[in-house]
Image 1: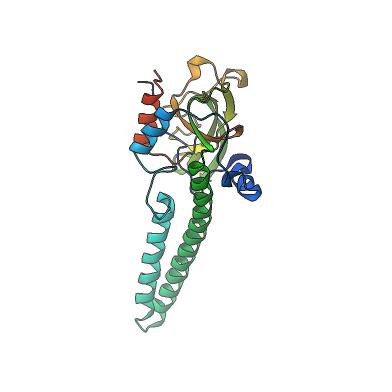
Image 2: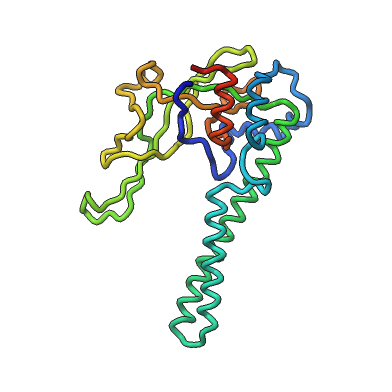
Length: 252
């Protein structure tokens, strides 16, 4: 079994490269049955038998991040409400602040969940009418795309640098079309202070990203049939689904 690429598989709001889903919904593409060659029945069966489709997760459509933010927000709002009823000034002020923060978090979670559910509806229609393709993809060398710094007090040992990476990926379609390459979205991975990932290979030069020695593993990508520019590894499939699909595709 090939090494499985573990990063960048999920998204808070369903990933939509090149606005392919939004445009397809706007012009009614997904209202009709797809007439293009179908993808691998074995891969689709492996995905469907190992989790929800076209994305894994709960039936309400919430992502893990949205659930955490919602739960924390509700807890803060409730705790703030309890403090605010204590009567004295200090608990009232603290309770009001915590309650406001909690309500803001709840609002953000519900807003993003609404957007996610909207895209899930489109994705579900595209899946039902045969417009989605799932294919094995080899992830090449990574590079740093962004750095987020927290607690920067001038002391390197106490400064938190969070590095975000991108990678080039090579998809191997199962519908008879030619392999194609695309750039992944950003993903976070554990790294040292200088941004060297602990378990990923960094390409030395731009031309090296898809050389075999810089391969970082395999995963499954999703794209709209006939539109390779819509490919993404942020499929929101579960690890179990990805493993089963790669086995069905006989990736070694």
